[in-house]
Every structure is written in structure tokens, then in C-alpha cells.
Image (tube, rainbow, N blue to C red; front, side):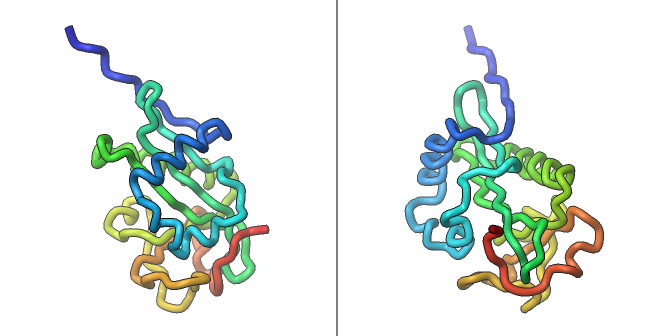
Length: 169
């Protein structure tokens, strides 16, 4: 007799999810991830926003995604996506894509204008992310400029974002 397949469900992150999310990040990224520039932008910021999501298979955390409010050149209504974490045993099955899509839709519905990330263009292009022209947007630390990607949630928004990225107040 086989067990029934678990039901997959996603929802907004709650404070109760944070220890489990931290454990997933440690498992997926290891301790060195905290030294990356994108993580420095999140320091001192709330550990979740209304755009952050988790996906469970029954009681098991499968994936999580974080969005942090940022400004770019002083211009707000922008978010930084990341980290996106998927438990290794669930990798390459579409769970990360599901959370990215859901998070972007929630952000768009709330009136956010753009989402920035440091990531792989081939993966994120399906969500509308495109490379940032060299020098248009700068991070507060070292980042491979080829991996700096921006998605417009409002058509034409990328034209208003130029300058240094900072955590929103």
C-alpha cells in the first residue's frame, strides 16, 4: 500500500516560518552566503515582507522566497528578490518558479514598480527579468554586472531607476 502524495500549498511567510526558512538557507547555501552583497542589503531589515512566500508539501518546507524593499538612486517602489531557496530533494520540479511567479504577482498587485536581483539570466528571463545596462544600477558591494537583472512590474519603470541600490527606510 502506498502513501498518498502530499498536497503542495503556498502562502505568505509568517514569523513562525522564520526558523525553518533559516535552516533551509543554511542547508542550500551554506555559511558563506551571508557575506554576499545582496545579503548586506537585507541586514537590519525585517526578515519578511508581504511579498515573501513559502511552499510546503504537507508539513515539509519545500521552498521559500524573500523580497526586500529597496530604493535605486533614491527612487522607491522597488524590491530585491532573493534568496530563492528550494530543498535539494525538490529541486528542478518547478517549485521555485511557482514562488517567483506568485511573489511577482503579489508585488505587481500592490503597486510595486520593479524587482531587482542578482542571478542567472536564463532562469529568470521567463519572468521578464533582463540585464541591467552596465553602470545604470550599482550595488553597495561587488556584484558581477552580468548577473544584475531587473523586471518591470509597470511598463517603462526601468527608465526611472538609475544609481545606487539601498535598503528602503
